[in-house]
Image (cartoon, rainbow, N blue to C red):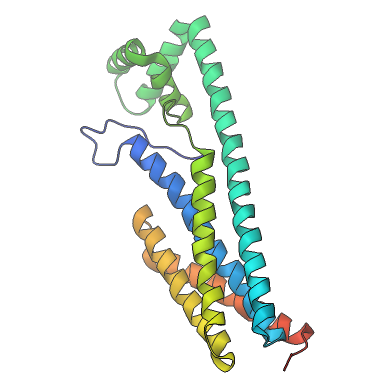
Length: 242
């Protein structure tokens, strides 16, 4: 399940739960889609370029990979996030039933959660009581399940983010290899891919407050390995067209 961060936005230095949860959802789907588009289509066009110099063949393979990959990514994200959303809804229904059937026990459980985080027993009980009076389901869902009932993950948001990001990423190797002279097309594609992966690694790390160098190295390393392997597979099994 997607990790969430809850807290009072008025006094906490971190982003509100709704803002951070939405950003992480877009970031995960968009970043994965862009990287997948760059690496997978680069692998296809470089592999085909290792087997033939015919631009039409390379373009056909690249476009087919772009369309299939974009639809596959979008569909996979939609199914995955829909399953997650269904699970969240099931947990919320269970929590709502428990609040209705045993409210005192649920309030004690909420107080114990806050007590385990460092509050005194008296203060934890007071916090649990006041939060329960204000919005019992909201309070218990966030503390016990890490779910905001008003901000469940969106399968359509994830699907569209993946579709657009994959397409944008895939166009980079495809256009770079088609718009370059035959003698330099593989190196031009490789260079464009390295730049693209470095950029997506930098942006993802920056938005997610992660280590920039590690993210860039990971992205570029995977992309470079993919292109080397697929190129020599193309050379090994391909027949060059003059």
